[in-house]
Image (tube, rainbow, N blue to C red; front, side, top):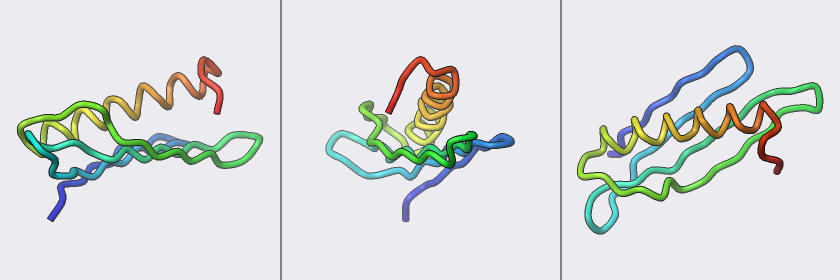
Length: 78
């Protein structure tokens, strides 16, 4: 069973799901946010590997929150 986590704000959500890999765990990160142009969704595999599921989920949530911040400030475009 995978460990999951989620954080959200008024118009955004970040969720993660741990995945066992060689050497520990990594996670899939799902980000979504709404804007005047509509809802945007993106999914990516976190590049870091951690010894525990808890560590990978927490770091994945942090990474997703940073990603949302950069996307909403129009620093990155997809």
